[in-house]
Image (tube, rainbow, N blue to C red):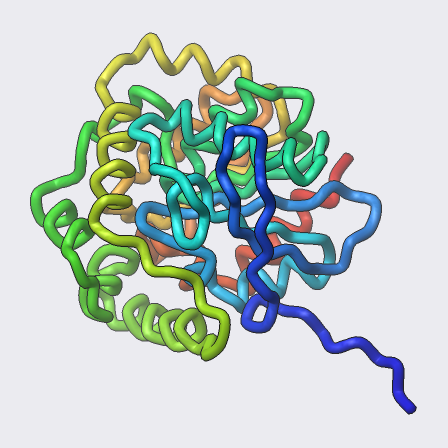
Length: 288
């Protein structure tokens, strides 16, 4: 009789829960190749839950290392109330790391998750080995004090349809939109044990946190000097949610950063180029 274990992947990994000291029961998925390097913790975008990660991107990375996808406080199936500041979101994520007894991790923060990743690195620097910042920006960055009316209206709509997601995450070109449709087919193909969708209360709190983070204040950029870990910064060349100039700003201000900008792409570049981005991330995280 065969003893081969079933392969656990993004579309089959179960949702796990852990109770933390702050009273929150966190929902997460954990799977991947393991090995000597620390797990890679994925921190999600505005209104996103565990199911919104591109399974092709995540599985391509998980083939080489262990990955952990997190619903932070109040998101998806995690309990509690979503904080209205990025700093508290970071403290909540640290409480999760303590609950699963991880004292060394790599971080992949996307959009709002990239803001949270920066704060984790500043608040718990010895716990973070390497950082990937995707489609995000620094505190007090450029043109980040709220979105344009068009983006804000669509992003905060009660129900985002496929065309709304294409508008927010992908370029206006047909090549970008076609790849965006492929992403949506992948992301929404899970049929069992799906995560809980996020309602308007999650959107309101997260948007308050994003707006507060983006209050113009050039002096806040000095905080980036405290993030000394090797950092990969990446974005599309025309991000309408967090303008791409902020990726350049991160790369310029972080002490040990490299920058990759993807062509014909917007905020959802990592879902448009999942294999290419996974290869870049895997190579970057293979360093000491």
